[in-house]
Structure formats: C-alpha cells, structure tokens
Length: 194
Ligand code: ZN
Image 1 (tube, protein in one colour):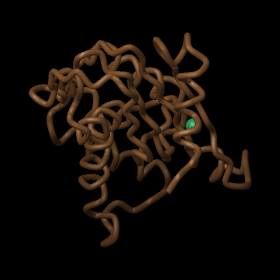
Image 2 (image 1 turned 30 degrees about the horizontal axis):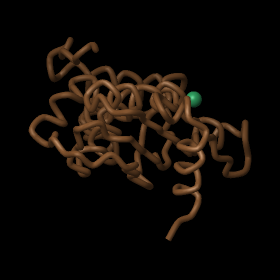
Image 3 (image 1 turned 180 degrees about the vertical axis):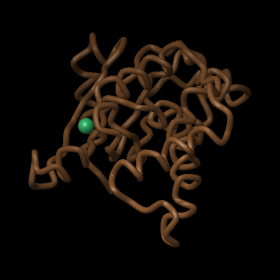
C-alpha cells in the first residue's frame, strides 16, 4: 500500500487553488474568497488523508483472540468519498460483515477502516474491494462481505442522472463467496433493518 508523503510545501496547495479560482474568472482578493484557498487546501488534505493510513495499524491493539465464530455484521457505516474522475463527492453506507476465525476486532475500528479507504480519490467498486481485502488480510477470518450503496454527485449535479439513483456494489470473500447460505444470511441481515 502506498503511504502518503507530502510532496509540496504547505503553501503550495493554497497557491494552486487560488490559481484555479482565477482561471474560473474569480477575484481571489474579494472578502468571501480571500481565505478559500487555505480552506480548500485543508479540506482536500483531510479528504485524502487515507493515503497515509494503514488498516493494520488502525486495528492495532483492538484485535482480540476469541472463539466466537458466528457472523459479525456492522451495519450502516456512513462514509463520504471523492470520485477520482471529477473530484466530486460520492457518499452512502457500507454494510460490513465477517466470519471470525479466532480473532475479532473492536467494532469501532470498522468505520475507521472504511474511512481510511474512503478518504482517497476513489471508485465505488475499488473502495468496496479494498475494505473487504484489508479486513480479510488483518483478521484472517473465514470470510468477509462488504456491500456499499452510494449516491454520486458527479452524476446528479452534472445532469447525467436526474433522480437520486443509488449505486450498489459488493465484494464477497471466503465463505461469503463460496457458501450460498452464508451469503443469503448476510443479505437477509442487512435487508431487515430496525
Ligand atoms: Zn465522477
């Protein structure tokens, strides 16, 4: 996994944003915009900080040895990401499940792993697979399943798709891929919501 290394000095990104605003025909000295280059730069740094985060390090000391081997499902993990084609947001919910094999993870770590991959320039398909593969690698479980439903503002704002269409992607590994009953149980669990 490629970890983020700052390539520019801290003043470089705001200067680039200021240049972009000028190119859009804006006056970057007017009151409403004068701090925008700095704010946009900070916001972009935050929304791409996932490049510097390692899932194994996030799980860290929250990995416990436990004989529990029934399905663990973490539902409705909200996330925000940026599509790599337009740098516009896509956002939604991830449904994450795994079948432990001697190791369980502190449940608060699952949303942090989702964010570690969401806070990058992404494709929904790749985001789904990266979350599943990272959990598979770290937990060494009998299986991992990830389903993501998301809305893409690059489609909605640019008029490609007028209504609030949701895109659904899934990645099934191990027992979720090989055992139809396990997969059905998971899909049933995420369908029946409180
Ligand atoms: Zn896009």
